[in-house]
View: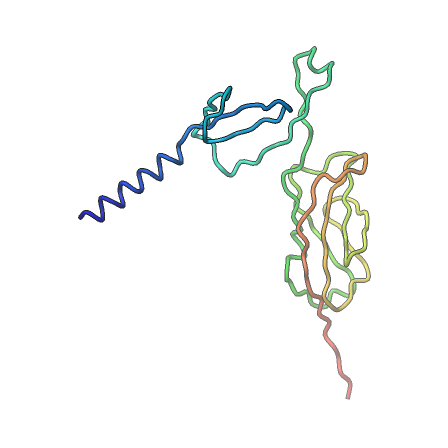
Length: 174
């Protein structure tokens, strides 16, 4: 019974330390710091307990001067996910006759003036849209990776690389 009480107390101690206060302060160089320990001039940060730990942080930029005047703050556009749906990773394709059908899942949808670049076996190719065909894909092991570039050519998002295999049946004549 005493061991159970020790484990309960230990669990309560661990839980209370996880709910400790967070302190925020800015140093003389303008760098913002966060800590679980008090610091001279620090303020306590109250976190919304309803927020999930899996939320991703979005980069913020200062608004343009005319946006400040109108009260509207323009957020920079960003894609949340890019995945190669077909061919799937480690998939074996049979008898494709040299034509590879590729399908990408991009969220949100591809924006005007943004382009998709695909690296097929290390060679970059610009393609139209998120569904396309690649020619002259023959038997062997292949790698494909996709990325989206904005109108200035800056990288917006990149997929994980997919390795896949192409097999071709051989017909033997006697």
